[in-house]
Structure formats: C-alpha cells, structure tokens
Image (cartoon, rainbow, N blue to C red):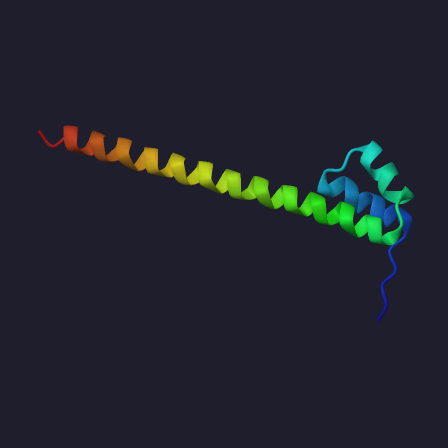
Length: 77
C-alpha cells in the first residue's frame, strides 16, 4: 500500500514538529535533498535539546535525593 502525503499533510507535520511559518515556506522551496538536510539538522537540534533536558533532570533528581536524605537524617534525632 503506497501512501502519498499531500503538501497540506506535510505542512501539518512540520507545524506539529514546531517549525515556524517562515521555516515551512523555506522547506517547500527546497529541492528534496535540501529538505532532507533541513530535517536532519532540525532532528539533530531536537536530540541535543533532549540530551540537555535529560542531564538537567538527572541533576534535579540528584538534588532531590540529597535533600530528602538530609531531611530524613535530621528527623532521626
């Protein structure tokens, strides 16, 4: 079964990904190879942000753990 996306489908996907209207207009001006490069660059940025967010979450969890440990130790006396 072959699935062909219309330009409107692709536009909706790009909006859902978080592209601005200007970025979407640029995307449709690109040749297919340029579109792939454009999407791959955005994917790389998103992945870098995920890794940054993951590290921040790990630091937050570490801080929460230590504060809870300190709190539980102070209640023992």
